[in-house]
Image 1 (cartoon, rainbow, N blue to C red):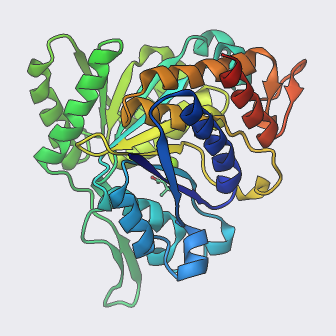
Image 2: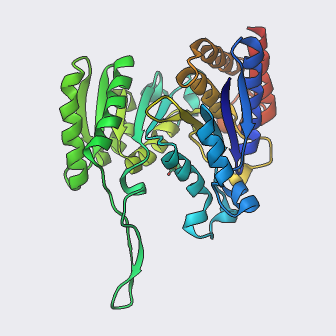
Image 3: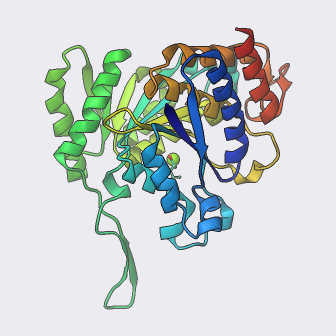
Length: 359
Ligand code: IPM
Ligand code: MG
């Protein structure tokens, strides 16, 4: 039987995950293929209980299941902890231990929310792009790293940006394949004018292009890419980039759509196993108030059904249900606008479930 490990995590994580579980359970009753749900602790919640953000038990469960559905990790409460046991390490550890090297982050504008973007509606209407972020390499994991004390007594911090050719190739193939399934345009983002490591990145990306004659490859420096994202975002179809550049650009791309609360993401290994999570963080400032937007997490369930479980029809159903709820004018506070009906986290989840049952 298919199995998913659910890790609510911290902050708004438990609230949004609760709504996603309602949706998954509804899908289970509507389809003949049922997915079993196990739960575990990660992040600050795991630290509080076990003294570590990624306890052995959680890791073992994660290795044993077909997919992981995660809420969010982190919060002020744990900010002063040693970096080795901070909540974020739970997420980074899962990515590394499960070999989840390919992070897919769509930025899709829902027409119902065009007004919620901080950019003019004509710049973002119809926006549909995908960022493919390398997730288990680069400066996030490079060695050596740390803070050392120099002979003169001054401290010095250092991290290493490193990519092997094979790491660049495997994320490159995923990106080209993604572009093939979409609009056929791939933009590789680097800083090849300054960083040797990304000069190699550019070279290796270019060397893959001949395998994909139906994809047009372009290259862009990361500073320009950041500017182009807010100047003319619709020029992009698929972006492929390094771990850290992808972290930064994906937040920017997400905000173009008006709410980071609407965007799911998938982190995949070489065999289709994946960790699915909303792009937004744990939002500790609004945790426990039942006002967070659960739609990105519910959309993460759809992405999981599509990418890991091959249940495209069920994924379509969820996406249609969300569109229908938006059409009805229901909005959580982050996407609220004049004339719409503001609802809580749980009312939003219930509304999606009701649409699914009615479909
Ligand atoms: C993200 C987050 C993480 C990252 C943090 C929480 C470690 O910002 O998934 O984008 O930097 O990758
Ligand atoms: Mg980030």
